[in-house]
Image (cartoon, rainbow, N blue to C red; front, side, top):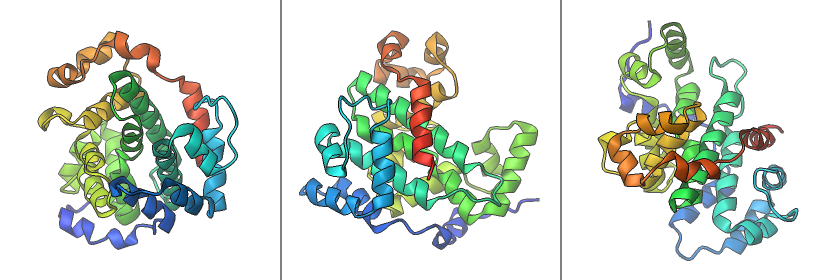
Length: 277
């Protein structure tokens, strides 16, 4: 039997989270820096050779379709723009920080692979709908970060929830609220706030599963749609399942997004590059 706890009690366990590398913390802070020196930050990123090597592997994959191979973070910034590189630095840094836990019931490898897929679809949707592509990618990558928080800080209790979910097939968020007293969207958003992620990403983490219940935020709605596409829901079935208010705000039709969606095999190939050491 898993004992319910308060969200405050759960937040008191956050000291168990891994330390985020300093350069990744600086990249997060750059969202709020109007005087950002992207050249200096790119230089700092390059000091972490492992991080840089992994980022460049992903940047040069077929998913990004660059016209020429890039060999440095600075060159990647020139070719892709700093915002795109920032998204990958955050993704790579957090994948490294939250390494696979051998004793865990929670499959972190599958979690990150799914998160990258959602991020890729969110970026493509944002391009089709003329919203911020890199903010959408980052929000998609971290939309379920609360699952990692639970697996790190409340591993035994979370494992019990996962076991019940596997046996019952019940919605995970609903089960978390019933068993734990809160859900992974709530704790994920609180952690994102403490990590100083932008408010729009915090909003997406908190509400991307229930965007119809809060005032419209484009990134939150885009991540919601991206997660449905990642789950295999497409075409008119996808459009019919969207809350009417969200569909109207995004002016979404299947015809307007289908051609812009990336190739699933390319997404997974890039995700594996991100996940392998």
